[in-house]
Image 1 (cartoon, rainbow, N blue to C red):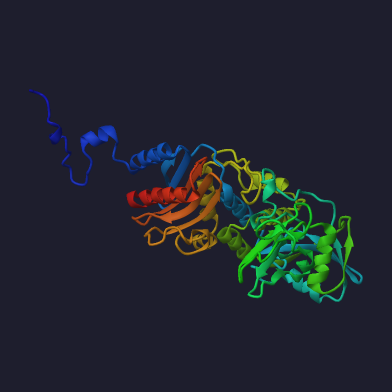
Image 2 (image 1 turned 180 degrees about the vertical axis):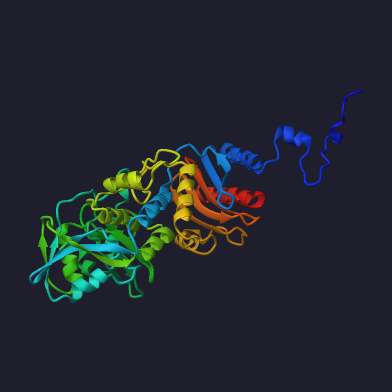
Length: 437
């Protein structure tokens, strides 16, 4: 056996090294290789597509790349792209309306501002101005410049709160809110919609007609204190009627476009709206923030044109092509890579203060869509989730065990398991990242 070295003697006895030569020749001892082995086991077990990208912000270097140059459907991770575009363009307050004062009248049109009488947002300055002015109000509806839905949206989700329609002048979040009480009375907010109720419905809950604002129910559809938000179909004439109702004064309707010089009136602080979009994953807010981006850049209220402008002026020199179709992530056509999403997260921190950026993202175990994840975990995570059937993604920021700030993107696509299984997998992945870095 002369010349052979027993395997037990292959230990490297240099202080600070913990690997054996045998391990180095097989698996290697780098954290990325160890984590990659686990990622491969997840893909094999769940038979799905997984992409992971992790970047060390503290030391300015990539840490982990697992199929991160492949395109995945991001679901509501798309809102990260909408947020960054708006942070680069919109300013401290949202453009609330375009208007011109002429003689004894105020001529105005919508800018897509989602805050007007929105149930979860502060009072808009536009609302206060229109209510208090002594001039006659004339609303210009104009010709439609965009569809009520984005490309790739599910047509049969029209009754669900998360798919409110797009409109030039949103009111009440473009939904009607139904609540029940102990006496079995159904309430609507705003009360404007009470006469649109029909108690002869044939399905559980409250269901709107697909192409009309008729809300059908039977029996007692909502227990006390439970609420149901249902999207409404907003036309120019209905917008004028709702303005009449909400302002308590006459608003004349013009079906043509408001031409000539106009000013922008601003409504509510932008940060308040960004946080609602990110914390609640509010799709209506996200879509109309694209309109805000369009308005400040002198574009029509058209999502496609807003996105094309942002791709040219905000998202130059990205690692991979962005297939970007809407503001919210409802579209099945959206495709981003994990490393491109991480690049956006990096740029966000390079351009804006860390505390400000973190404030837009839900915190693990505490706020928003992450309040039930990372509970009793030492991992500090500020991230945006994104999910619909067969897809779950999580992208944002975290601190490793050694204290390094990391930007990450985990994209799980095309799985045939409950989303909670992928939430667990994602938490396990980030736990590995936390421990090994």
